[in-house]
Each structure stands twice: as C-alpha cells, then as structure tokens.
Length: 340
Image (cartoon, rainbow, N blue to C red; front, side, top):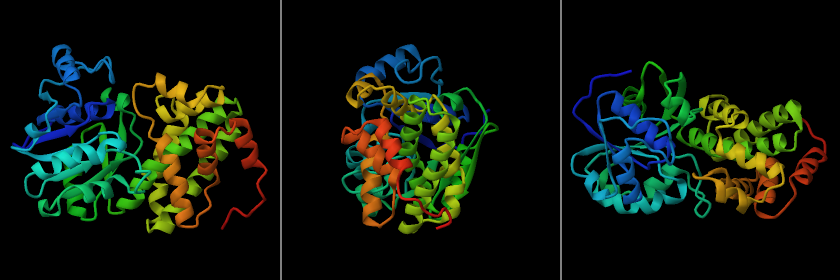
C-alpha cells in the first residue's frame, strides 16, 4: 500500500478520526504530510505516543506525518490541502489560512455538512472564505468510508468531485491505493448534498433501531430518505443519478446500518429515551447530522421540496418531539404516490 511521492508537501487540517486516517493514507504513499491539530496539547500527545488515542485509538500515526497547531507552518512549501475540520469550524480555520495560501493551491474538502446559518455546502463556504486571487482549485471527497475501516486497509470506494474533471482526476491519482478506490464526478453539489443529508437520515434510522422497529422500518426509512435527498438535490440543480452513487445511496446505506456511525448512534440513543444534550456530552466527535437537520429543513422550504423525514428529525432534535410520535406522524401522513 505504497506509492512514489512526487516531492509535493501535503497538509491535512483536522486531527479527528477522518483527518488522521487521510494523513496516514497519504503518508503511506510516500508523501510528507503535516497534520494540523487544533490544540497544542494534542499535538504533543500524538507526537509522543505516535497514536491519536483520543479519536483513532489503536492506529499508529505514520512516521511521514508531522504535527503542528500553527496554521502559518502549513503555507510555505505546501501545495495540497485536505480540509477535514468539522463543518462549524471551516470558516474560522480557513479565514486564517486562506490569506496565507500559495497561488493555485489544490484544496480537497473532506467534511460532510451544510452550514446552518448560510445554508452553504462546505465547498461554497471555502469559496466564500479563501481569497479569490489565490485561484484555488477545489475538489470534494465523499462516499461510504468509516475512518476506522479505511485505517485497517479494508477495501473502500469513494468519489471525488470537481467542476474541472482534470482536477478530480488529479485528486483521484493522489488518494487511490490498492484498497482505497476513488471514482470521479463533476456534480459537486450532488456529491456534497448526498454526503451531508445522509447524516440526517442516519439519525432517523438510528431512532427506528432504538425503538426496535425492525428491518422493515429501516428499509423504508433508507428508501424514502434517499427520495428526499434526491428531490432536494434536483431542485437545487444537482443530477438525480448522483444520488444513486457512492455519495448518495452508498453513504446512506453505510451510515444507516453501521454502528461506527456517530449520527446513527445519536438516533439509537434518542430512540432509547436519552436526551440530545446527554448524548452529545458523551460523544468525543461531532455528529454532523445534528446541525445539518436544521439546514435540510431550511433548504427544503427554500426550494419548496417536501422533506418529512428531515422535518421530523429536526423536531426530535430541537423541538422535543418524542421519537415514537415522530415515527407515527410519518406513518400516518396523507397517502400519496411513489412515482412523483
């Protein structure tokens, strides 16, 4: 699982499980990688232990990975940047780093989320934050990819999207390994919406499982959830077929059925009767579906797309609706056709 490095220095921003995993993946291919960590104390801990015991325990941090808590140290010889910070931190981090960037940097967004305030996808947030004169080349990475399984070299397929297919193909070559297969796409909006909205559906699937509603309910939830995702995406200008791909159906199935999903776990515990503040206090990492639920509802209203699952997830998360009542409300809605 190695390949020749080409002299480029790479930076990964965000030392959560996914950022650490991507830094290791690139380092294993022979690249010199700098991993930016938010807190100096965590830099010192990972450097000392050569393991991210907080977010990715049991996985050694590759020798080609160096760590820093200073964004200014990334800008001098770095030409490729992978952004894996939580969605709520994207504008803050890149507001500092953006002016320091070299000309024509390659920026790969690996964060799945929608900004609830602006309703921007992560690539839109980056475009709004990075100075235009830097002429940034931007791509987005998405698809069904639990960080732990990628770290264990379990076969995984993902997708990278960019408006310019040559940029997508460059990222494809950069990230692909014998067990990490990267496809390309030019539907950036569709790929990002799929990766963000599936987290909302994963909370709903977790609620169903927490309530012990069984396989029928989960299958219905996944299917109708995909319909909601695609309906909104098409209304916003994305391609319907994107939602049948890795960033849509692929990621949706993964996060609605896998217990490694933080969003699914939030839903399970809600279904079991725990409160959202109680659940979030126990999580070490961000469950992106929680803020994305409000963004999904707002986008549905803006584009006049019915999103009943997202609306009821929002009601459970933020309006104290009981999970069982939310499911029953969905089941007793007015009957309708499936093929419209």
